[in-house]
Image 1 (cartoon, rainbow, N blue to C red):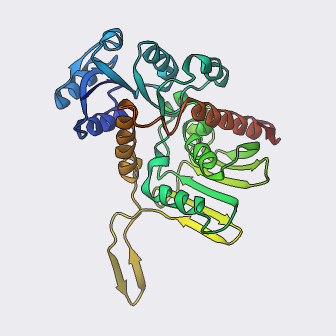
Image 2 (image 1 turned 90 degrees about the horizontal axis):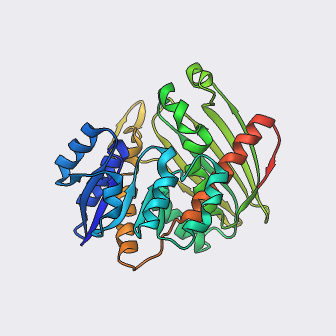
Image 3 (image 1 turned 180 degrees about the vertical axis):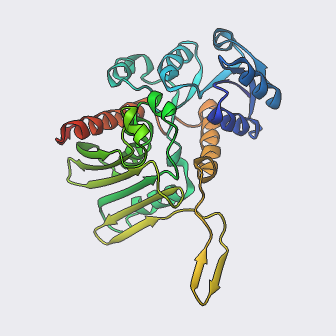
Length: 326
């Protein structure tokens, strides 16, 4: 059994803690969080102990570290965990500063660092990827990724999030790289604040469109909004030389009502923890394989840096109105 230290006892940390507890191969040994009440509450709920970061990393019984703390700590904690000989499962993004992330590449090259881009583990998107790779619609020509949140976050969160491109759209940049099969070389983005003036006052945008082009000419359009008005909208369309593939939204149930007014389906799942619950579980199953030496990280440190580079390029493009070479 592999013993795990969890850093971060907030919302996403609790999800990972539950998924660790659900795996017979894993045991959550310690919880680390600067907020003592949060750490103690989660430790009590999972049978773990509260520890300091130094104690967790120096414990030889700890095989893996799950980093679910604030974004500004991700890179430092990942480097310290790798230096201590631990396998690392780190939430995205790896950092908000691209130069810092690139500078750490040598220290983390070849290390067991697994980045938490959970959408690669969503069964619907994995099925689309498998059909795309199998050539069911011929060669891929263009991709359309839609990621619209049901409601905007509070401005207090926006101020520390790194902004829409590095906090929200970074998932879509990773999905684009995964599906395109070629690295984007040019990014053009345009963005506005249309949803909440408080987001604009915090220095961010809440609505964006990003167009990317690969060296081979494949195109990808990403649509982001902090508020859809109709639920959590997560769709992907892939257009090939012989057809198209589409992964649609997931509903609360498959029940439909049919009346003279027409058919009515259930609502879209309205929260990311519900929509991607299975993806989070599959991520933890993959971390088990990494710990067992049965797999290398499917999403490694270089993937985190590449997604961050696209996010930074999108932000620069939105500010300058120019396409940015990557």
